[in-house]
Amino acid sequence: MINFKSYNILTYIILLSIGCTFITCSKDGEGQKLPKREWTIAWSDEFNDNLVASPDVSKWSFNIGVGPNNDGWGNQELQYYTDRLDVVSTDGKGNLRIVAKKENLNNREFISGRIMTKGKFSQKYGKIEARIKTPSGPGIWPAFWLLGNNIDTVQWPNCGEIDIMEQKGNQPNTVFGSLHGPGYSGGNSKSGTYSLMNDRFDNDFHIYAVEWYEDRIDYFVDGYLYNRINKTDVSGKWVFDQPFFIILNVAVGGNFVGFPNVNTAFPQTMQVDYVRVYK
Image 1 (cartoon, rainbow, N blue to C red):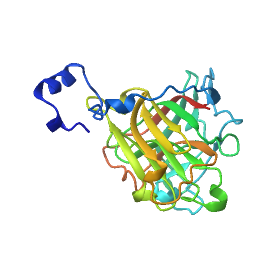
Image 2: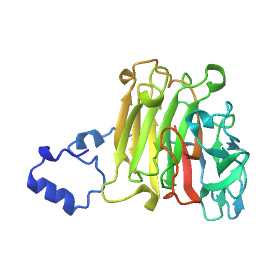
Image 3: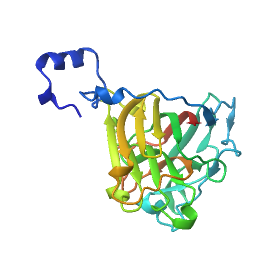
Image 4: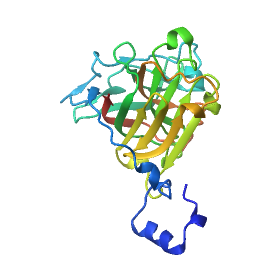
């Protein structure tokens, strides 16, 4: 966040005059002088179907229900995840859509979608990005994230989790980028935020990305590096040395975001223009 005490009045006026929209644009410009990186595409989904269709089954599968322990996926989420076409599909216009609705299904009063590349694609290290227009509203929780391939054998958080983009629907100008692992999970995760000063993330598409290296993970919004988590920054074991798979979802309610209220409009839709993975 800008510390206005470190700027003179002239600097402040200049920042306002150029329409600076991100709170993190301050004196850390040196951190943006990154070395040149040469990336080659390893996997992608552009969602360019010219009709409404389920996601490509060669790339994606669905999580269904309320979690293996019937506990809202460990977060007290309220929705029932379904693979219905009106909930998760391409829109025929070049986007994937995940729609959260207020609708009763299997004793839950909300439905939504969660898709993943588990068993179909995973990668260790590289750049992972997606161009997304997020939903908003109290209790709405859109996310673009990664889990370690070994989750079924070592369980969470020992498998590791990389949250590329999470948003609290009642804070539509802020994105969270976090790491979870053994000794630093849940409320003790390693996390950073990036906030828009004069805009909201639900107004347009933005590119959310991480660059994942052996000794660190860098977080970006629209090409701006706002968070770096080094291997030496975590208090527990660094478990980000194995392949991870991709997840896209919109949760309703949960420990991280709170719960919907009378001001939460439904349906809520997350649109994904593409997901791309580079080596």
